Structures are given as C-alpha cells and as structure tokens.
Length: 68
Ligand SMILES: [Zn+2]
Picture 1 (spheres, protein in one colour):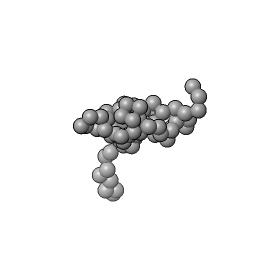
Picture 2: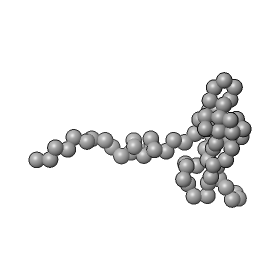
Picture 3: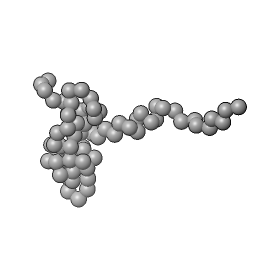
Picture 4: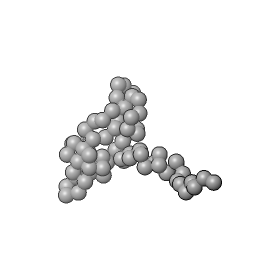
C-alpha cells in the first residue's frame, strides 16, 4: 500500500511561479527579454503613496531587448 496523499495539480504551481506584472511584456527568464526600469514610476516602484501597479512595486519590468 502506498500512502500518497499529495493531490496538488502542477498547473497551479506553474502559474504561481511566474509572477508577471501588468508592465511586463514577457515572463521573467524569457529569451530576448530583460529587466528595464519601469517607465511608469521611473524605477522607484512607487506611484504616489502606493506601489506602482505596472511593475508591482519592484521598479522594474521585463521587456523585449535587442530590436523589434
Ligand atoms: Zn513601476
């Protein structure tokens, strides 16, 4: 008898591992993309008194680099 009680689907895990922000053009780690200063908040991660919604308060967004 095997006592396997883990019932977690891998789909939800993959989604949780890719925290994309609205300002991101691609998921982190995507070839041809890189981190850049968030144009919305200028890299401060703050927009007024709250966290910038585009970069999620990180001040950086993942955008395409090298042409296009
Ligand atoms: Zn921002």
